Amino acid sequence: QVQLRESGGGLVRVGGSLSLSCAASGPSISTYAMGWFRQAPGREREFVATISWNGGSRNYADSVKGRFTISRDNAKNTLYLQMNSLKPEDTAVYYCAEDTYRWRVGGHAQSEYGYWGQGTQVTVSS
Image (cartoon, rainbow, N blue to C red; front, top):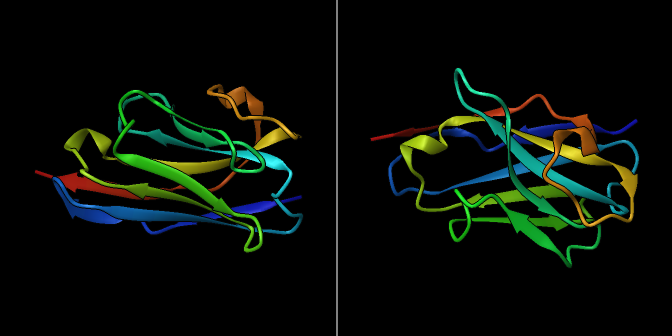
């Protein structure tokens, strides 16, 4: 089974940028949609962005649209999330996840994803 490991989190000031990576080991992720989710303290985990198996379709939560960019490099078995213009409300643990089934566009529901990473903390200070 695939193992996902996020990296790139840290402390950044308001308006700054961070780039998250999600490295997959084991089976290739190239035929699976991938997603990013986040969980802020005291809140439920929420959808951030998703990308289809071939990168042709990308969808974002309204709260990050225009500021975050999801991408993937299937040759490196890696998923990315570029985060710009960060706000304090972006503070959360960020998780990457792999779709349960192959060849899909990628959805917003957590139940559609079968494998999850351990998460990486992003803290935006004001």
